[in-house]
Image (cartoon, rainbow, N blue to C red):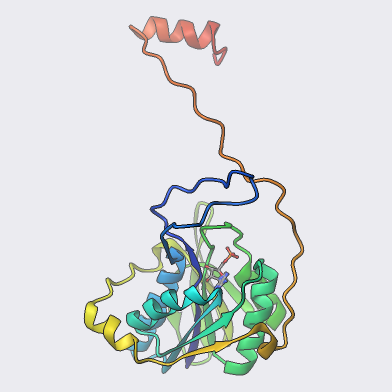
Length: 249
Ligand code: AMP
């Protein structure tokens, strides 16, 4: 049982992002970058499947600039066996990423691909779904529990107002939701060991994929500033304000 797990390098979730002065995108110069939080959950799940004896190999994949090696090293320190960086400076939209992953799947022949449900930079929530479609595989998205069998995997999915459990034939695509697990804290000895694990670098051309884009970002802007609130003396004044000023009642 081989697992391919994807890790995207994104602006750290603790950073408050700001649009660039020209509104062409989000400012990323001198900003802390980290592994997409949902991808940490995906890696953790792959490692737990390996620790329970159900998976034999975990390959971590990242697509992007050479600094993506850092998130791959984190995945290796968490427990992935080897890593592949598809190095490109191109703007990456989900369809492009899915096409590159499709080519990698053909190369690596995994039984299971685990992605994050969403990258917190562009909030697309599309890549796993597109990859499954390109491969003609099933998909278990928004997973909060996985039960792996020989030929099949049961995926409990977080859906509006409840949970849904589906059984999927392997090979298949799964995307990790927040409650799937709590990623482990990476210890220093494992960070040291990860430096010796194999990290292969490929170009999109090596995978036979030509980078392309299909959309243009017109403008990125801050949300409008919230107006300051006011204090009222008592309930009667609150009701009067809601009725006469805000016209909410
Ligand atoms: P998105 O569809 O962009 O919200 O991304 C969903 C998931 O696809 C992410 O959580 C990652 O697991 C994976 N993914 C997207 N872009 C990349 C990338 N450039 N490199 C590696 N994985 C990616």
